[in-house]
Image 1 (cartoon, each protein chain N blue to C red):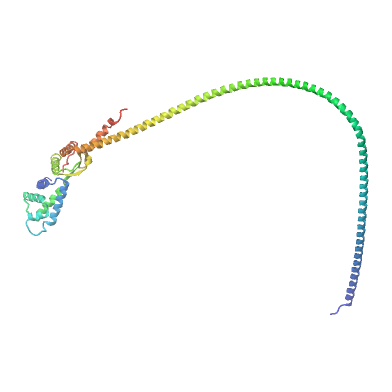
Image 2: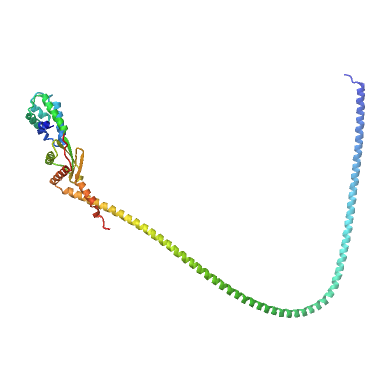
Length: 240
Length: 167
């Protein structure tokens, strides 16, 4: 098999071009990497600088705050110290004035309390009387209502009782009448049975007694009498 | 029937009850069976061997009265057949009574029936003590309860009100 030189040459050229492209690509890639790394380093340094600066700012701020606070505390202590002196004098005057006021107010409040108490007592008494009056009226009203209710209840109860009594009485009379009839019926039935039993007993005894007491001649006569009676009643032989 | 009554009157006098009739009929049957089959001998002697003496005497007397030759078999057979028919045609009067009657009492009742109701009637007597007395009579389809038991029942039924307490 032989390859066409043109084709081979084209192939080689293509291969060369591809190699060049790859090389340039690799070079640009490495440059990018480098640049990235350098930028990264720069970023890191920048970041660290920022951190440092920030820490410095915070530290300054903290220091300043401490100093301000210390100043304020100091000033406050001075003020307090100064005021303590004033307080003692004022306190004394205040105490005296307060005591006076207290006495005055105490007397006033005592009087006011007594007045108030009296007024309260008066009011309470008035209220009490009023309540008593109301209670009396209420009790009277309740009493009247209750009496009326009881009377109404009494009337209704009486009516119902009388009606119930009447109903019960009627029922009792009806039941009594029914029971009486049943008892009478039962009595008659029993009497009937007893009569039948007595009758049978008498019959049986009579039959036994009479049967045994008849002589043979009497028996014969009874038979003849029976035949005669039968003859009278049509007992005859038919002619053949 | 009248002729037969005269011919058999002597024998029939002894047939008063159904028991007698059955007895006579069975003896007639015995005669038919044996009388002319025995060894030769006198009629009277053979008669004694076959039937009872009472019936034998009655038969002998009746044969003589009616001039029937004792050695004439056909005449005797005719006589006996006639007697058998006559007995079988006798009317039966049924009597239920309260006791066992004696022969004499049966005779008395039979005589009364013959004289008052008619000839040619025999009695069928049965015994039922619960009747107390009297009799229940059944004759030619007619029934009459004339026992004391019935009379008592009627009396108690009629007068039962007397046993009840006054209201």
